Amino acid sequence: MRTYELLAIIKPNLDIEEVDKVVAKMEETIAELGGKALNTNKMGRKKLAYDINKYKDGFYTGIQFEMPAENIEKFKRNLKLNESVIRSMIMVDDKEKANA
Image (tube, rainbow, N blue to C red; front, side, top):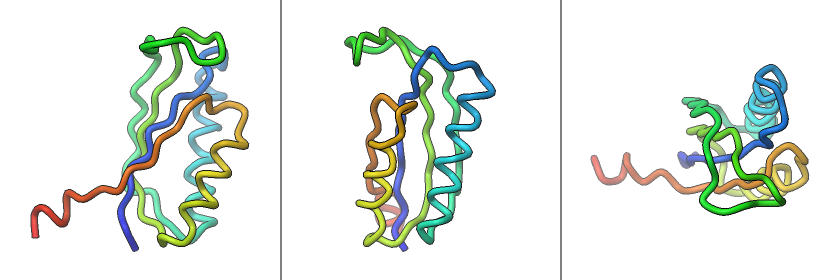
């Protein structure tokens, strides 16, 4: 399994409990697709560099996770269908290769 990093921006009009539910759902989806969430970093509410769907800020969340490569596209599709997530980006974590 490869290690990935997800950076997601969640709608700012949700309260903290709803944001926690969205993050828990993302972690649950990772597990359903055969992966494992390694580290979750809730960075809080931050101003966006530019407006996205008329939002000026959003809740930033980073999740480091492992997942089989064949399931990444399913996970990306799931993030796009989640109406609470206004933007997301998944990157391959190559730190372990650099240390080897």
